[in-house]
Length: 322
Image 1 (cartoon, helix red, strand yellow):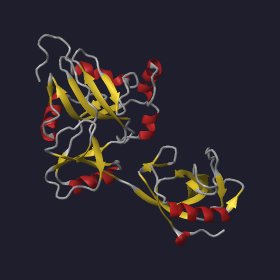
Image 2 (cartoon, rainbow, N blue to C red):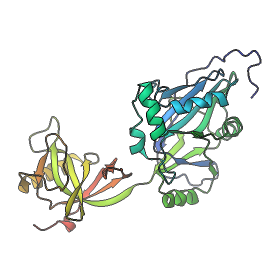
Image 3 (cartoon, rainbow, N blue to C red):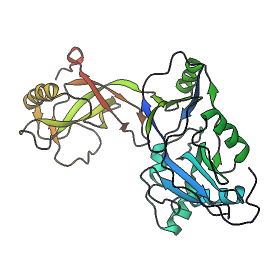
Image 4 (cartoon, helix red, strand yellow):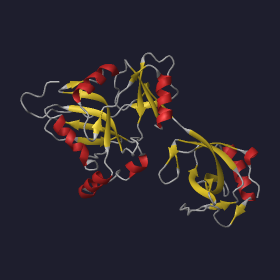
């Protein structure tokens, strides 16, 4: 890790981020490392060693202007030509990543506005891999070796850190995730190379999900389907005073379920919304809040909506009476 002795900026390769496959925790797990899964936006950081940095999103877009507070990492790495992989997050008061807060920062390309937001809602880069250092590609080496290099290279700063990982002990790591309210775990095979742009079985993500019962209060028409076939249902949860809107659920329903559900919804149609709060959904059809469904979701957003909800089944045993 010797800086360029000539003081000339390093030439850097363009490296797409390696991707995970979803799946259960690996068993046995002695050959795996476990990292916390952060709820943020993937980011590749490059610096040629001259104090500047470039931030690139998973889609390959330049987002350097969006997160100006991460620019200070260029001075920390001055003299080194580096390509790093990580996740941009915004942390809440408890130190957990909050995607709702991050959304306030995403897509901002005006430098002045980005600088103001950096003060009110600072971003943090969780760095978990290094693919290139000082003219040498590290991607072919094992994960464990890259992590050793990374730990020596990038000390923690005000807006970045290198989170720890656990070797083996996946079940204990999962318990920690559950108790800490984190999004999940990423298991990485200790011997795995870094394969740019590939969704590799050597990296496996397991997400925590919540299962809950929700009340259907409306629906939207499925695009391209016959009239009356829902594409999504509008759901809520009982709260003080009535039914509070919790979001739209469109993933996970089979064609058979959609057909059956459409027949049920037709019978209990009503002219107005049953939700206490306003529902800004175009083309909404309202129904009496009788049907109960089971869904899973990754978390609740700050606005009180289900994040990434997935339909599981209708619960006829819990149907509400009028």
